Image (cartoon, rainbow, N blue to C red; front, side):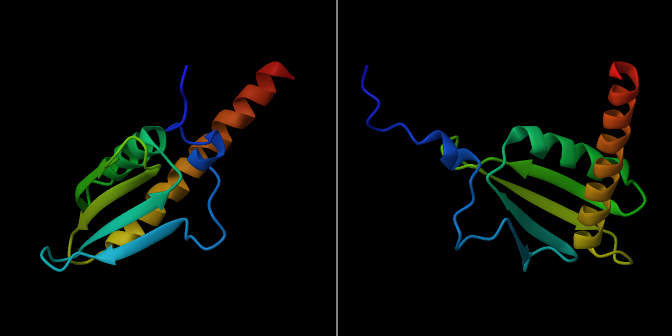
Length: 114
């Protein structure tokens, strides 16, 4: 079996020294919207963050993501918020809520397992 085009497995999750994990670009066409790219991630984190953003109905007007190519390990989010809230802050808040939820799950598992 030929694997000459296969990527090294570590390329899916190891960030090069000169790369940024997260980049934010203001959307010039849509008011109060940003594109946030997260390197070395996939649909797993994309769905979690998108779902959490949708739970913030007060401020988040749109939240979506895409993985542009299966061999590029990055997730690109589009977030639009109401005028009284910065979309990057909405994204950070969603990450904080997810982190809290994961901590709660971890504690519950530790309590059950011992």
